[in-house]
Image (tube, rainbow, N blue to C red):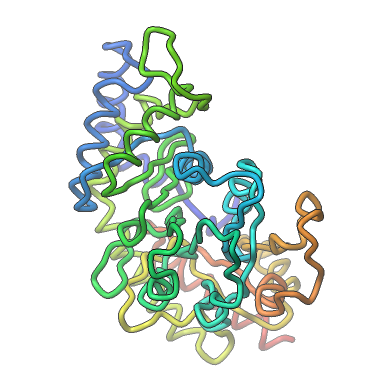
Length: 367
């Protein structure tokens, strides 16, 4: 048993147990377990939270990206610009529609896609860009949007950034679509998979709703070949409970990050949080020397930690046909070798947080 887990969902559940169990019980009593009133309610709540007219619940964050691309008719032969330093789903959604991911290296200060390199990646085949708001901080959308200038679609991968802001604008609301994950480890996580697409575009929203149910509006008549990607009612009910706590959880994560920043400043480099950004710290990531040895040390001391992400997307074996090689995106490759994520969950106690700090200092003092 870890003395300090990377994430303690049990602690969160213990606090919310009465509310969550009632919400789940209500769904089970109704036996409306797929889509239904609980999903309708969550979609209305989230649309209001984001200040957009449309929020569409889907089966996962991966499907949110896939459905956005499908609904925008991105297909074989098209290109989609994105970052090589993110979770696999960003690129797999592009591959699933038959398109090619055109990678752009990260800004080494923020770990997000480098806007200065986007223009040279645009070709006549470019149909979309997927900026990823990594680790809870928005990509530099103020720089990205003028480069795009309406020539192709902007789909925000906000799976790790629910509630983050950029110049006062909320993650997911700056492109034509914002895609979210409700995987349990996210700041707003369910008890299984779940996702959502938000948009101001009524036509796009209608098509995503169609595509998430096999391209049918009912009565076994199918206008398109869609997929089965419906948000479960139990997940929606749990998320409706949890969303009311999201702002407070993000505040606590920010407090934990501030303590880490001060205590570890002499040892490690953290992603620069731009002054016009409010991060929600889905992860707290350090760039450190001798990363793998530090990981081993922390785990032996009972401290949870993780590496996001040890192999950049352009080097994944399944994307070999796209033609990328080691060395193509040096900043992403360096980040993959040097970064480590520490516990930052809202329930992290002062004592646990200090244990993490002390063990890191001990490692570098002894080394």
